[in-house]
Length: 236
Image 1 (cartoon, one colour):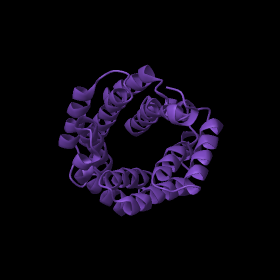
Image 2 (tube, one colour):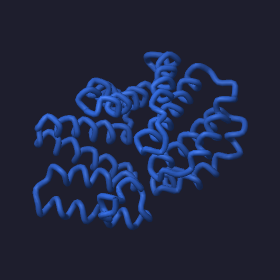
Image 3 (spheres, helix red, strand yellow):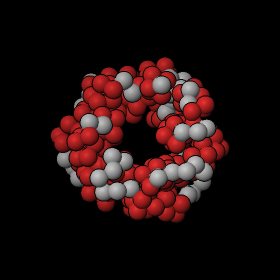
């Protein structure tokens, strides 16, 4: 399943869970997570993700599972807003707030929730610096839990905060670490964005090499993530 997800085959990965997701909350939540992630990377499949979330939410869930479902609903609404499909910022904030109320302080899902609340703060404020505290909490938790994929994202966003502050060396270190972790995890669909982020704080000719590799991966994955198309193809 990880191999399918990491290569952008979210529908195929979700199909493997279809039978168990009908009766098992953990499988239903994982299936919803996969389809929500597909929306973020492709800006497609919104109806499938909504249906998967509703199916999971309709099950008999404990507080941890309800919190996880609310976190996914908040992220789906965030994705719709940040990708300019439909403004669902109020829904995102409400869902993530509900997740915060449901998840215990020691919940392993807290790291992801803190990160996503940071993303909402960044979106609303227009600056990563306003979200730095949330990103750093998520970062420390992800590292302590050994969550490589989440840590790659927190490294990237903390590096962006450093870049905003003019700390280029710190930004370069963070972006490089984000790229390293994504390569280590084999998260192929997430490597092109990491390469481009690193290229922004890297002098030529290394920057050009990083951009060329990002373009190669983008073509290999049939134009995923879709939101990289303007930067890698020169289209608006």
